Structure formats: C-alpha cells, structure tokens
Amino acid sequence: MSLLNLNVATTLTSRALAVGREIGAAPLTVAVLDAGGHLISLQREDGASLLRPQIAIGKAWGALALGKGSRLIAADAQQRPAFIGAVNNLAEGNLVPAPGGVLIRTAQGELIGAIGITGDTSDIDEQCAVSAVQSVGLQADAGVV
Image (cartoon, rainbow, N blue to C red):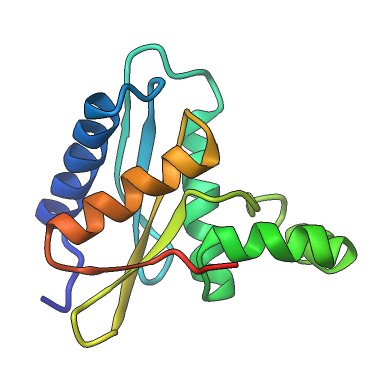
C-alpha cells in the first residue's frame, strides 16, 4: 500500500477512536492527512471541545511539515523555543508542538501521511494514533525523545 486513500483514512480514524474507548480516553478528535498535508478524514467524538479539530490537524500537519513526530517537535519546543516559535510563525500558527501527531509510513518506510489526535493527555493521544496505524499494517513514526 503506497497510497493513503479515503478508505484507509477512515479505517485509521475508526480504529483510533476504538482504542480510545477501550482504554477509557476522554472524547477524541482524529485527523488523517495525506503526504501533501491535505485533510482526508476527520472525526470528532461527542463531547470533544471546540478547537479539537484544529489541534488534531495541527499535530499531524506539523509532523509532516517538519518530517518528524510531534513528540520530537514538543521536545524541540522545550529545547529551542525561539526556533519552534519562528517556525510556527512561518506556519501561520498551524503547528501544534505536542505528542499525538504521528507520521504514517508504508512497510518499506515511504511517507504517505500523518495522523493527529487530541482530546486526552498527549501521551494517550499518541498511543491511540500509533495503535491505529499499526493495526492496518503500516509503520507509525512517532519519534522518540
């Protein structure tokens, strides 16, 4: 599979939400973007707060824009706040430097998109994203600190 299409994207969002329900997460919002940063699928659970769609997209978009999982971007924000602030300014505020944005790669390592999740703690958000990506036989590239 080298294409992240609507069928795969909606499967990813459904699986991420299912994992969230299994572990008792707060209401989640899940965004799946293609490799060009275009939104393919967005699902927001009942009870998710107002800005959650933008946050989920921002986590996934930031991962794509900088080529690394948003966990690493969050670490960069702590270690180099001026740089991440400048990058976010260039990105017109669309970068969300918090775990939960995970790059999606094929088994061969080809980048095909990203998934962003928000609603619970960032660690839980990331756990749901990684589980969803792996459940469809793709590689989740969350980055490690």
